Length: 452
Image 1 (spheres, rainbow, N blue to C red):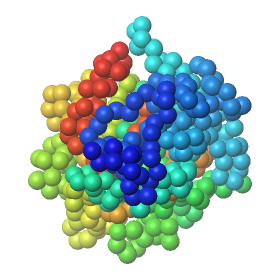
Image 2 (tube, helix red, strand yellow; image 1 turned 45 degrees about the horizontal axis):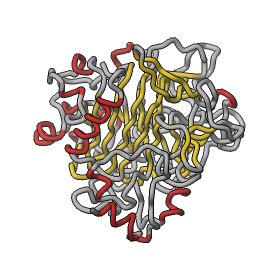
Image 3 (spheres, rainbow, N blue to C red; image 1 turned 30 degrees about the vertical axis):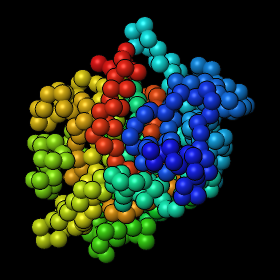
Image 4 (cartoon, one colour; image 1 turned 180 degrees about the vertical axis):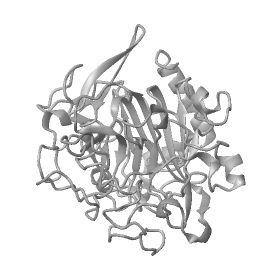
């Protein structure tokens, strides 16, 4: 198979790749038989401790982390030492860890009945950096790895299909928040710049990291603030057509002036760090063919995100062109016309998802075989999501949201995930339905005690 040829002969300039002895075997998906390396570029998992010359979770002093320890490095399981690892940046006002000790996630055991699963606990301030350059320099891929336009690093039928990102998490979304700098916005994976034309900047003296993608990945577990009713909690992802150009005041899809220039930015573009568009399902602007074949038929409003254990799969589908043209060329909240590709997500592992889907489809919304919701706006075409620059995992550097907590508390700066992260997978294409069904079966067995 193709993946085996890559490992054996180093095709496309890649060296021979073999997973380290002692790590769990990678999931046997057909996807990897058509991939550049034959093994995952990025897979973070919490079900191993040590392997030959490798540590999965490492403390700041270089020791193997124990339950209760703060973790500085989470190993990218299947590549070499220092290749794509998730690392807490050093404490620094120049693009570094602003929160000090609170910036490090904690290794925990989460109990489900008598069964315990190891994972990393995040409370809103913690985040890792993943330096994509450590991977691209080592394996020299002839093109970007993760893009909305897909990649030529895969062979048919996966080539240029898009990109996918999977998270196994337990959300504590509605647990009380005591840290005044943490709000309800929760980022899972992010790589894009701070936009200086938004009125509220980072904390005084702090410089936002610049080695990020211009219109890179943004996957939000929750795209609205927590002071809104819980049933409004929805995820978001992008890049999409409403994001501002870094030149200020223009949408990237068309050279149309922003009708609400800073500081009066449109509400879902004006968060200071480029929040993603809300997931609106197939009810607005998605053509009927797309609704019936690629998206669930929802009735208004977004498919809600919930707390508890769950597997989330986000897709940027380059095989599904999607045009969203507003009547008269100008839409609600000043959105520009745009054409691009479809974005969607799947949920699995939490039976409550079958009860909150807008349009009843028993079982389908709690499955990796059937999408839960599609974005109401297109994804921007041919954007590099993540390649040779930095991506932030589990949170992000400090930057204010539009929601002020109180009259004297200032603007919330921390927008990280709140809960436990067990696994993160990145795919340089769309998974086939067979791949998704296979993963669902694997997770159903692996996380049997946690799945409700």
